[in-house]
Length: 285
Image (cartoon, rainbow, N blue to C red):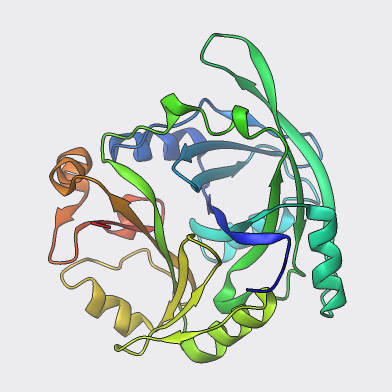
């Protein structure tokens, strides 16, 4: 990838209807969650984060309807819960926005925002960000993308929040279902100045940059073949469908997810219906 201010996947946003209910679900799957965060009145949203290294998952919910969160509300109404968008790490969001503008994409932002954070010693600080979005219509396979510059990494990547009973360490892949994997993968590659890689089962991967997770576009039939015996109830016909994590101990992952998932030939798999519309897979690195 030749964009100088974007360095691969930063985090996956899972849009949920009941924020606290979703947090309880993911805790039962063996994840350690941050305390609940509240964004600005303009954003009208709240979140829980699941911190990994070097990336993370964000459970995001609407607290108050605003113009800013209209696209997410539309997503929830149209599709239901699941992977709604993916963030890249931005070195400099202002410069990154100008980079994509030079490539013909009108950026949304950059926008600065913050949320209060209670640190392990009980003091309250702030997590501060500057983000910009690619145009909403530029959503490969129905997946929106944006970039996030972390101004205060020390208030987000807190060591105690990065240890999980399921031993998840980092994301390996974000899977997207689509009827046109090659076309949507090429679209993603064009947006980020990246490349595509054909896989043996017909899926098409797009490396996100550096050592970060790959995007993998595939048909729903290929998804079913990759996860045989796993129910795809709750999975979309098009859009972000799964997060694949590298775990250090699959036996611990199996124990942590309990009856919500199962050990398979792939790894430990949780079907979409048991994780807010998101198939979760824990595999060895």
